[in-house]
Amino acid sequence: MAEASIAGITASEGIAIGTFFLRREMIDNQSRTAGTVGQEQSLFEDSLAKARQSLAALMARVDVSAAEILGFQHELLSDTDFLEPVFQLIGVGQTADEAWTEVIEGEIAEYTATADEYMSARTDDLRDLQRRVLGFILGTIPESFDVPEMTGLVLAATSLAPSEFLELDLGKIAGIAISEGSPTSHVSILARARGIPMLVGCGTRLTGLKPGYVAVIDTHNRQLIHDPHDESQNAFRVRLQNSSIANEFARRRAHLPAVTASGDHVRVYANVDDPAILLGVDAASFDGIGLTRTEFLFVGGHLPDEDHQMGAYRRIIEWAAGRPVTIRTLDAGGDKPIPGVTFHDETNPFLGIRGYRLSRIRKDIFATQLRALARAAVFGPLKVMIPMVTVRSEMDEFRTIFTDVINSLQSEGIACAVPSLGVMIEVPSAALNADSIDADFFSIGSNDLIQYVTACARDNALLAHLAQADNPAVIKLISMVAATGLQQDKEVSVCGDMASTPALVPLLLKAGIRCLSVAIAQGPAIKEIIRGWDGRELSGDGICA
Ligand code: PEP
Ligand code: MG
Figure 1 (tube, helix red, strand yellow):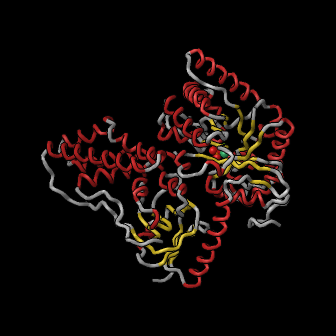
Figure 2 (cartoon, helix red, strand yellow; figure 1 turned 90 degrees about the vertical axis):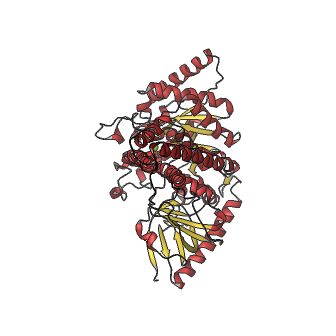
Figure 3 (tube, protein in one colour; figure 1 turned 60 degrees about the vertical axis):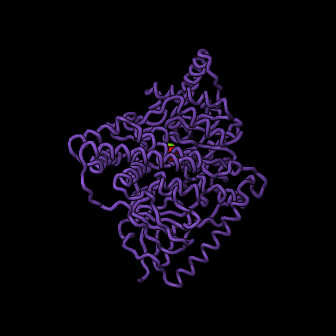
């Protein structure tokens, strides 16, 4: 075969070189003889029980957060509202596999139809469940992979479910490429947490490639190269070796503080979009958590109750082991619609009822979240911040609401504590007037700040050349907020993607920022950039000019 390259979307960064291995699709369209209605019903019940049992066994051998991902599937298998239609279809003459497929496909279609990225990413979990139950109905063993006894495999598949990933012997896997999928799916989160380079969305050409050849995954250039020429193969091997040396060096120093050449300690916090990302991450590698996006709790329009939320926040606080944890209240709306919660009929959702603007209207949802946060604050140093603040009165109002929440918890005799309360600086007016906002700390959401300063929707790829983080107007606003922090002795961090971009970090340091909250995988590399910073900016490729 000649060298072929296939474009994909980066789900987990890195370079991998290995032997291309194509995953055999497990569910063939097998035909089976239909039984009587009674036989089909008991076959379905039996298959559900086996699926529950096998999921429980898998949950018992993975860590807590991975088990939580599987817990969603396990719960569905006991959800009578979800299962009832399957029994009804069997009752009117469908076979167990037809009825199961019809119902779960309907559910998947509903999830896929939403514009909500989080929700559509959960379709992977439903497909995982579909495969498992169908495997038991059809009598195929739902063991996902028959991976050869060799290491250094570049695994390719049409799709990959979270439980299939967890069943893999990762010691054999150098990298993964998938035809379908999204970077926000659970399997992408799991791959990131385990440092396995992974591309998703590679399209159908991927599974047409022949196994057994050398393949390279290069997430920097977002491509898989099949059967590379000797020359490019050697170049990749050199890059892999260099990046492993640099990564290894950074990783070994990840638990050390990030101190600039001139002796400034820069705090490096972690961003958490889903607590699953914390799996296997040493809390000592970060100074704490600078941003927890709580939208993960509201997947699929599901409204988590107070106890459920409190449990999730408590686990994050306990993971941080005494380091500060910043949790952002629900930031629904704009690029994060939540069915049944956000407004659908806005002409411009990015300028509409989103973030705190929505929370103050949906008082019931907000109060539940604040009660859970006040209760979780008992377990460690918690900081709570509100997104999308425009004027100072919003922060004043938030303080009053929080005080009411604390008073009512105390009057009910429920243990609670007052966290420090801050705001996200994402709107230019809040950046310009930060000195008038009575917050305990500020966290700059550069993703939104850039879109509002440059008037470019953050999800419009055609405007990417205008929506630049290094636009002097953006940097000026960041410097102003940093100066306010210095004057008022308040922490100012940057938690948008800018802070995780090595080439932009010197700009932030120069602007006076001494606290960054970054994507977990970028933590060690960003610390190295800080250590090497001597007051100058970096050139475009991340090298000090
Ligand atoms: C930001 O806007 O930079 C930010 C951190 O918030 P989000 O990306 O979740 O809107
Ligand atoms: Mg934002």
